[in-house]
Image: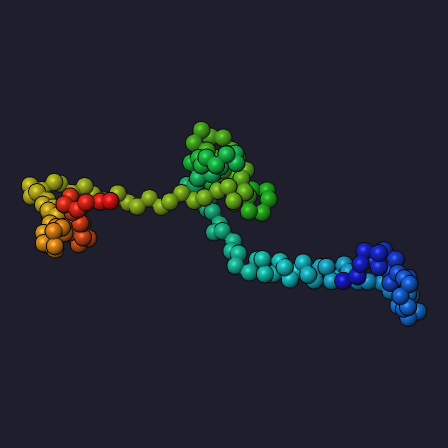
Length: 159
């Protein structure tokens, strides 16, 4: 990459070091083309794993941000907005907002309510934790219901 002075004068600068006269003749550097190619390469790798969000349907229940405060409010999609990836959104009080797709999330799907089952007379019994005592030396080991060992340190002297 040429130095800023070489870019300004379009040639190598004259120094005390002997140089060929051809190197001191003006030479136009085509940096904008190289710069654009570099930007395209960087963009290609940056966008490698990006994806577009799913489009929203008119009347779809959504959550959106009124401001960038982080609070999400319930609303419905009224239609597409004037800009790409923007939508017209109506909140519960009837106000109309134009929001970018970044500030809109579809509401989670609500499953159909399952019919309530009448309570039965049978009672549910939960298993009791099992404690196993094993004598090892002068300390007693206990096991919890998950099978983890619990060591009783009551008889030991801790220094």
